[in-house]
Every structure is written in structure tokens, then in C-alpha cells.
Image (cartoon, rainbow, N blue to C red):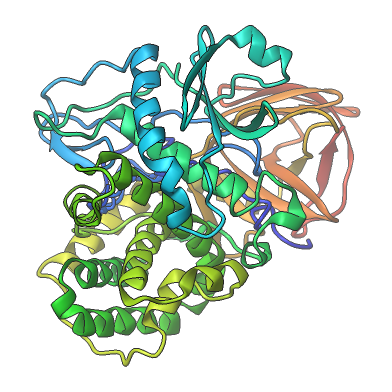
Length: 542
């Protein structure tokens, strides 16, 4: 094997705030992948979820950037008696009844106002973020409109198609009238939103604006829609979103404490020296005790962290009253988008969003020249804000370690139900491996969803939990539905890897064809013998 399938910049297009796989809200109160985004509230990838209230970060969906992203939920709902993420991440008691999804006209009107307020000033947030000429193409598959800082121009789906712009599964880069554009599909029947407190200026439209701006930054500033040579040098390094399984509580505690201390450093400037010293302590401890995780996630901390900083700052620009007031924007960020972490996440990449946001805000207050530095790397926003700070320990909040221990134990139990059978099948000497390559040249991959990426000892590459996608090859289509699969690069080719029993059952091999008939995997493909992988026989789909 050479390299990794989830190597960056060949990375999953993570639309912050989109989640797959369901789950209870998490507990970082920030208001995604960020599906994954507070309570760290990306509604977690396991049913347990995380505990930072960020606007749900992320989801884990889509294909290598800049391909179209997909989603199952933008903001998760919760069962009776639990808290639910609202808009950009504030919470309300569940059971009060879900707010109706906005009509197309409501999306257009709300996004028009948000774009006009924030995008002309986005260049003040980060060098190169000039969105004053960016076009937002909004469609529900039936109607369409082009929004710019100057206003709204009605268009149509037919006109979009005539210009070669398809209505995306969720969000995609595009071109319109010779200008960079972002296309978004508002007709997601599975989008669900919880109502916020009366009069609160956070809800579905502003949440979507956050995600659009986040992805626009990734497309056109980080460079993922502009070609490999335009991607930031720092994002060309190898990086992985995957988390080690079984999960461990300690690194999740350390990263929660890093975020909490950075948040306090932003909230209370008079305590900043002590809070930065504490953040440096937890960052040093995390790096020392979990160096492999730190190396893997550094690229994601830059990618997701800077995009979250820009997206959430633009939300504050759009929502603060009066617009343009820095004091009002700061209050909005603190009151609505930056809540303390009261628990942990079940995926390290979900933490990249709030840590990057908080670190960027503090670095701004300190007057650091951090933005040029993250473009070139290798330092992350966290690295730069604690550089030169002498670490000093502070006590953990009462009960936080116990809470995270309990969450991790529950998450491991739930993840095991999906991953352990797949891992056992991989290690079973009787099974072979089906290697499914990317679709034929010129063919776009089908939308993909999964609810977690994991690294497992003695298993190569990455394990994808609850993977759903139609995998097209020349000889047919293989459809996986919430199936745990493996992914790695073999001889320079990125493969989806599926263990199967070639002797019978639901996946008999007959001559040069294999047929799958189980509930979570169906298809009939031609195969050829492939290279040995991890001591196992392989068959490559043709």
C-alpha cells in the first residue's frame, strides 16, 4: 500500500454543520462536518454524539473536493427531554415542535440579506476572502435564483442546466456570468430544524448561510475548487480525519479543555494570560501523549479550523445589530456560537472546527499575524496562538472527565455494533477482499454518506462506518447501504475495500463475476484477481 485514501487534499468534502448517521446532540456549545459542528454540537457520529455545542459540524459526506457534497441532516433534532441544536448552535428544549422548513422564497430573501451584510466585508476576515463578486445560486430543483451582494436575479433550473450548472446534492462550486459561484440545493426533505427562543435571529436560513460561506472559503480561498496547484501549501501535507478505535477518553478531554481555555481567553481578556497558559498546558499534554493523532489531524485543524473561523465570523457580521459593530459581533459570537464544552466528541475532526474558531478569534485580539502562517503551515491556529506561552495547569471542570469517560464508553459500545463485524470479516482467513476503484473517467461519483472514519490496529487504511453509496464501475453497480467498509490506496489507486466470502452465502464468486444479495450490499460485477493485501487474496472490480 502506498499512501492513504483519506490523505489531504484528496479529502472528504466536509460541509460543516451537516451530519450523517443521526445521533443525539453533542456537548460543545459552540453553535457541522462539521457534521460535526458548544456543547460541541455536531450531532455526534455515533448515536451518543459529541458534547460541544458548535453548530453541528459535520457531517461526513461527499467526495474529494471540490465535488458536490451531500447530507442527511443539517441540524439534528433530539428526542423528548433532550437538548437540540438550533440554527448556528444554540439550544432549546426538544418536544416543543419542529419549526417548518423555510419556503424557497424565505431562503432567497434571508440569504439575500445575509449576503449583502457580510460578503462585501468578508475580505476583512481573511486575506483573499473577497466575496463581493461571488454568486450564490439557490435552487430547490424547481425554482432558482442568483444572489450577489447587489441583490437577487431570478433564473431557472433550465437556465442553470443550459449553462452547465447542475442543481447539486447540497453544495458545489460553480461559475456564473464569468464569476465564481456556489450552488446550493435547499430542497432537502430530511432537513429538520428546532425552533429557537422567541425573536432569536438564528435559524435555518442563517445556519445555511454559515455553511455556504464556510464552503465558499474552502472552494475559493483554500483553493479546493481551483485545482491542485492552488490549494494552500499547508493543506497539501498528509492528513487524516480518522479517529483511533476503540476510542480513548483522554485525548477527547484534552481537546475539550484546549477549546474551553481558548474560549475563556476570548470571553474575558483580563484572564487571557492565565487562560492561554492553561490552553498551552493541555495542548502540550495532548501532543506529548498522543503524537500520532496530533500529526494526523494537523491538516484538518488548519482546513476546518480556518473555514469555521470565516463562516462563523460572517454569521456574526450578518446577524449582529447594528451591522458592522465589532462589539455586537463579539457579543453574538460569545452568546450564540461559542458555548463551553460540557463533554467530549466521538471523532477528533469534529473538534477541529471549534478549536480553530476560538484560536483565530484570540489570535485576532492579540494582533498575531497568524493567517499568512496557516496558509504555508505547518502550524495550526492553535499552535500559533500558544506559541511562546509557558504552559500552566488549571483544574478540569467538575465532572468533565467522568462525563467524557461515560460518553466514550457508550460510543465504543455503539460503534462496535457496526465496526466489529466488519473488522472480524477482514481478519477472517476465509474471506477475500473486493477492491472497488473510483468510477470510470468522466463519471462523477454518486453521493456518499458515512457516520465516522476510524483507524484500527492491524487493519490497513481507514474503516468507514455506515457507508452508503452506489459504486459504479464498467461492469455494473454495487450499492452499499449503511455498511462498514474499508478504504485505502493500493498501487496508487484509491479503493473501497469490502471483505466477502467467495465460496457462497450472500456473495458467491462464479467464474469472473461476483454477486451480492444481502440487505446492505447488492450488485453483480465482473472481477479479476488483484494483488495480495494484508496477506489476503483480492479481486478488483472491473
